[in-house]
Length: 152
Image (cartoon, rainbow, N blue to C red; front, top):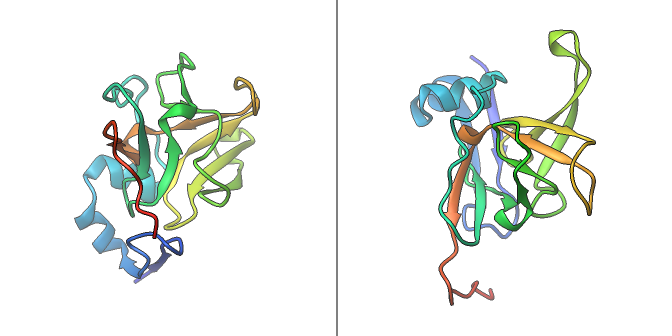
């Protein structure tokens, strides 16, 4: 039985190590989230791109790690949530993906190795990148107006 070892980013409220088996991931996630994040699937376009108005943070649906700020989200017209940069250095990782007779760059959650989507060099300024992410791989956390982050 394969074990996926997950380490949360230091300083995050969930900074504990998770050791989840494939069966545990299946139990924890919806069938669609499991197929996309643990089996490198792709959801249908225009199925998970509706989010509340206002600022917020997109977190990994598998482990809760912060991935993208809503301020970096833009409408790419592709049907998948698109961002021009991750929330911070080290939030996501990139891997060479040569599946489906193509060469692309896969994007994964650095905290739990979940497949998120792909990154392409056709995005807007300031980075010129388009992180094309499966919406089912994201949980949106709105930030209430006037809410302050904990300082420590």
